[in-house]
Length: 528
Image 1: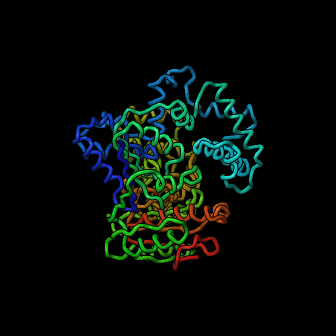
Image 2 (image 1 turned 90 degrees about the vertical axis):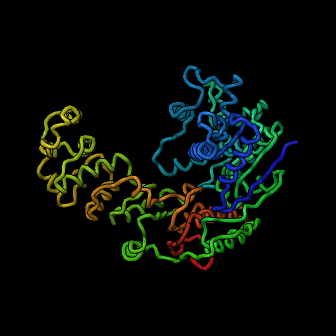
Image 3 (image 1 turned 60 degrees about the vertical axis):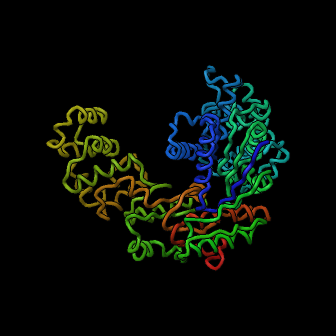
């Protein structure tokens, strides 16, 4: 008889830590690590979990072969049962090249820059994925996909059929097929202990698989927070976790959330869906909860926040959608603040900046930094008549002479622009955001950037911040029109409440709501 336990864990209560203790208990009772299934919703989270479990248990990561995503487990089962051949000529998985060919054949544009056409393709692909993840025919899937302009059902059904025909013609599968094939063929995993983390975001087909696999298991664990359901557009719902058989255990203590922040989040989400936030203990200390108008954000960051933002603290700027992050990135760039996430500094950009900053200060860049600078300097600013690649090779082959070479290959106008702190207009292969970031950092006198500085301040979507935490959270409250449209229904309001509940509960200390009057998501007694 299988034993099923369901952990209901509010933010900061240690869902993954609890599963880790159960993992160690299973090992101590004699279960081989190869016989323990531990799934995560995302590939990155699965990789992190493997490291956490290895460190906690002392088991080498190579033996944690069933710590992975649902798709990873299903692909492994399909391969072991001869349904998928990874050595298949031309590959077994639909590729970008295949999608391009499919688009040409049937008249679809997957890489379009036209916003209307892009929205259409987003609708079609989301519709297809929804049908597959929910095991429903196109007639039911069409009722669940929201968009700016609703595509007629006939077009969605046509896309669904065309894509199915194309995959069959190519003899290939896509990611959604992996789960469906395992379920259709009744392929069982040989894991006697099964752990499903982030269970609130599991789709109906994932739950069906877990129930099928659970029939052969001895112990099954689900860990999640029903109120953190973020992927409703793929079919995830709190009901799946709450209605699954098993003993419900509420994790009682959050070690992250200030008392007043938890009260705010719990009040808001309980008021907007049919499930109540659990009663948990939190640290007694309150955090700061303030509202800043978006027009005054730059002033607030420079005049107030900079004074109490300690070197060992972190800050998130959370936005509802990716494109909203660009305006915040522009503010941080102009301030000369290193940041990661949306429009954040990349490794190559850091190398380029180090070369420029060193030239400004009269120091000699490294060969790697010189090479990156050559990639971005206009040909007219190089006192070198050959190809850029030849100049880069020269630096590589004359490493010992770099200090003596100094900046002989750069034009005086470029060097003067660097020393004046405005080299942006002299750079090629650099968009306006990169130029803004470089000029802002030079103006702020930043000599060097390292990964720790980038990680201190990040611009993330709310979905991208799931599972993360920061000392200070700037919650940008603007809601795009398409999302406001989805909130016209009871289900839509509940689904959106889960998203903002996740956002509010990322902070360990202070919550700063950035208000966009007329566009805000309503947060009780903070913004409407």
